[in-house]
Each structure stands twice: as C-alpha cells, then as structure tokens.
Image (cartoon, rainbow, N blue to C red; front, side, top):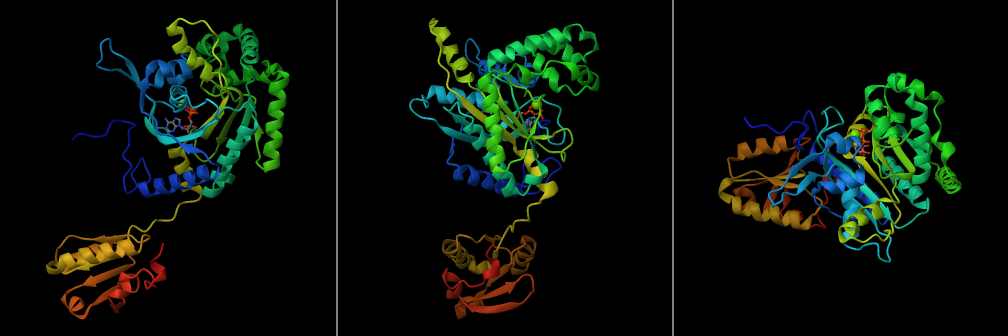
Length: 442
Ligand code: ATP
Ligand code: MG
C-alpha cells in the first residue's frame, strides 16, 4: 500500500490522528479572513516553490530553517536551478512586491494563507507540511503598524474565544548596528565560557550568537544570567519606538510581557519582535510570531543589482509582518473553545427510483431558492436504502417524493429528530419566502 509521506498529512472531512476535519479548517479560515477584511488587508497567492537562494539570502544561512529544515531540489534545466518548497511566506511576499513594483507610491497591506514545508521531526503541532496565515504591511517605519498588526491578531483570538489562553511577548532587537554591537558584547562575554555551553549554542557562538539567548538548556540559561542585555544597546529611536508600542498596546487594553530573550529564529528582523504563546500545546507553544524587517527589501533588491554590476546602495522600504500556524491554532481552539459540529446536511431528498428525474429537479430548485441550505440526495436506489442514507446524513428534514406525492402535487416531510411525518403543498418548498421551517436554517 502506498502511504502519505511522513509529516505530510491528509485533511479529511472527518477527524484523523493528525488533523481536524476540513469543516473546522473552513470555519477557522473564514473567521480569520473576516478580520483581515475588517482591517482592509488584501489577499495575495504566491507560488509554493521559489529559488533556493531567495530563502538562503532572506532568512539567513545560519538559521535552523536554512541550515536543516528546507526541502530543496534542483529542477531539470541546464544548468539545474536549485529550488525549495517554501518554508515560510515572507521571502516570497517580498520577492513578489519587488518584482511587481508594488511599493511605488503605495503601502500595500497584504495577506496569504497556505502550506509551508519544513523538514522537522513530526509531532503534535509540528509537521513537515503545515499551514500559515501570513500578513505583511509594507511602507511604514512607524510603530503604529506593529500596533495595528497586534490589534488584528488580538481580535482574531477574541473571535475564536482563545484570547485568555494566549500571552503576548514583545521585545526590541534594535537597529542592525545596535544588534551588531550587542552581538559582539555577547560573544565576548560567552567566549571564555564556551566549554560550558550546550553543543548547539557552542556552534551558534560563531554563526548566530543571538539564538543562544533562547536555548532551552538550563546550564546555558544559567550562564546567561549575567550576560550583557540587548536593551542596554538600543539607540534613542529604537527605545522610544518600543515605548510607543507599549503605550499603544496599553491603550488598546492588550496585555503584554517584555521578554528580553525573544530574538526569533530568522535573520531579517530589526526593532520590534513579538510572539503569541500558550501553555496549552506543550513545547509547540508559539501560535503566532512576527516583527519588523526594514532591511529585507533592500537586501533582496541588491541581489539583482550586484548581478547587473552596479554598486549603488539599494534603498530599502520598511515592513512589518507576522505568521500564525493554523494547525496549532486549531489545536488550541479545540482544547479550550471547541467549535460546534457543523451540520453536514439540512434537507435530504429521497425519491422513488422511477421518479429520479423529478427528484433532481426538485432538489435543484430547492437549492436555487434557499442558498443557505445543504440539500443532499442519494443515487437512485430503493426508497429503503435512501432512507438509511438520510438517517446517517444528520439531515434535519427528509423530503420524500414517491408516486403519491407526484400525483397529489404534494410532498412528505419527515422531521428526523422527532420522526414525525407530515404532508405539504409542494409549492411550499419551491418558494423561498414560504419556506418557514426556521429550525433547519443553520
Ligand atoms: P518553532 O519555534 O515552534 O519551531 P518557528 O520559530 O520555527 O516555531 P516561525 O518560523 O516563526 O516558527 O513560524 C510561525 C508559526 O508557524 C509558528 O509560530 C508556528 O505556529 C507555525 N509553525 C512553524 N513551524 C511549524 C511546523 N513545522 N509545524 C506546524 N506549525 C509550524
Ligand atoms: Mg522552527
């Protein structure tokens, strides 16, 4: 038997050991999209595959994602182009914004939803193909954008009934030079303690020292107690922006915790970083994460420039974004505020096999008149076997059409909860206005 690939899960109409039913996904996505619409953000749909160098340059060579989590291949061109299944969406969004010149005179606020791919050890809340909602707001260097994005996520949590389960952590990484100065101080502090660090952190000391701050190793954490603090290296502007963000959040009534060790695993961030975390999902605690990345656009633009041989410095454009993991969000929603079962069917039309054509016309006109109803039929088997299917379908009402009904121009309706059967004028169901059985409306 051919099975699905490890970490790549089916999302079915029913629950599986690795996914909730597709109806839950649709409702979650529906709520998220409503909030995105309320904030006036616009959808983009991007390719799932990009050139490998896009991710290597944007995310950073020394990050977990690029070092070990990417699904990379070469295509069949000559010479072959290295390509990668997207591990995140920001790099592709920035590529698209540059390629289509979307920043000229505009500050687009964009979102995308879809699968991402990372070669990780599958476990609850961590998969090789997973789904993110990503939001990117371009063109503003003001911290109001951070406030707006966080307000948007907070509204999503409220609409999902999980706002009490999530804690907002924020930090400022400062501008690039400030971070570099801090990095040098941190490396100096840790160099003579290198032997006492965990293996990953020893390696990171030369490749990505800031990541040592979020090491899970207790010894490493103990060593960091007296380490220099990032906040002491922030310049005037970084500091005042960070304070402004805090006062916006306070004004909006959004609680937050300053986590001085929050650094994020991607290279492109500067100034604000934030995460929404929960204690309900074990070590897969982060549901949503983001921050400001003012340098990335310039950095990616300069790749093309250097090919053309120009040395002109490339202007960047400020940007802020976040991504949330939809699997983790669904797990959290189901843990604390489960979605009600959606009715799979409102009306089941059972029709005598000889009169199937009449049944088709009837179901079709009912659907046309009542857009809110789910109207199902079985194929033309015996009335008894169709009734069995109606029973299993969860329908509230079953409409029965046999010769008697056709002759009398009436229909029989069975209330599937009470088992009561009644007879009605057929027109009664033909006209939307006269369709008065309110309880079958969802
Ligand atoms: P983690 O620390 O859990 O590995 P991350 O820092 O790698 O997360 P980001 O790159 O910031 O994650 O991605 C944003 C969000 O996408 C995460 O907060 C999480 O909700 C989700 N996510 C990331 N990787 C996975 C995965 N392999 N499976 C499911 N969800 C994921
Ligand atoms: Mg990760």
